[in-house]
Image (cartoon, rainbow, N blue to C red; front, side):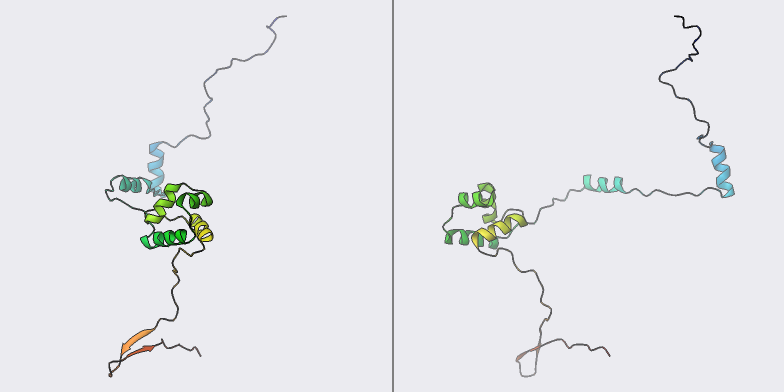
Length: 158
């Protein structure tokens, strides 16, 4: 068997063929195109670097919102009323005892899932109402030094 009649070409490994179609324009060509107005310049606005710089140089200590002491007292009172220990409440809520302890001290970061579990187990609402009333009463002082409550007048559209 002879290899003389086979038409094998030389293969270069690790080198690419240069693509002639995708050549970048030279500096001279881009300057000429900018002078004639054939180039549209778009400025990329990337603020990620600035925000990272601000975070790195920020010396302010940020703290998470914690539960209040009032919520901790509610948990403690409800737990004592049902005669449940912290360990038993932790087992029922599927958390560690230290988490229940933090909640009772009011130092824990609020977790809505855990609060709903504790509300269901203890039978007490732990969250305060955050809904605002629509009809606010305005107090004004009359000439007889009595406090009179007035409602805001309703505006009727014609």
